[in-house]
Image 1 (spheres, helix red, strand yellow):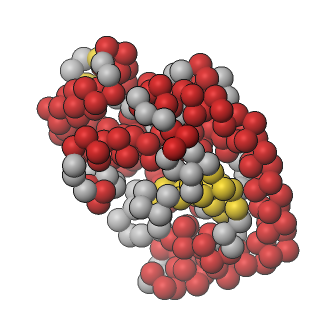
Image 2 (tube, one colour):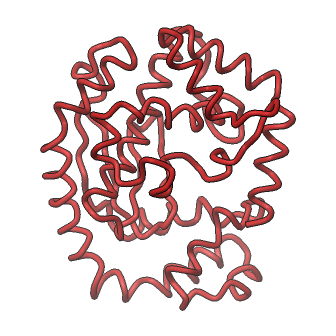
Image 3 (cartoon, helix red, strand yellow):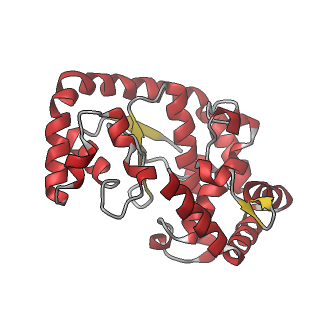
Length: 262
């Protein structure tokens, strides 16, 4: 398993940002842009059609990128690479044990694109994910671990269930389950010790609305963690999915309310 950290260029950053500026996107995802880039005015952006939105964002951020951020992102790529390499062995050991396979033999082509997007999407088929340039080396590693767990999770899931990769994207339940289980897998000390977002008191390594989600009178992450500790990986996947399927309406209601209230 390897990750190549790189600066993918200005256009990639803009395209990445635009993924979270669609009309149906909840403020939970879209509003980070205005916090980090106050020169982008929310009311101005919201009044524009899609192509106008993209042009407005690009025009506003062009000078910042070319005069300042390009060099900073290039330097971050070098720093992130060195920090990941330092811990690569223990990461592979922990994830090999968690997923019952040799992770050194898979995903040797992962790409971590360092962008201006405050929200970091991941692209399963392309074996790539985006990271916000403001992350420190430790922060970037913590975020990378989250994404790597997704890649391996769905690799193992797909081989076990034989379904399709297009079923793994939001807002599918399979995507929701994959987001929630990250905390249990991350609890291995070989991973948690190098993730500055673990434990929850440090911000958490899963979305905050999962951290306070109560299902069947119990925190859902505690229930899933028990399943994880009691089962081998394939049995855990089956049990976790069945459980979430039986409470799907409650889970989706909590997510919708949390994103709306943001």
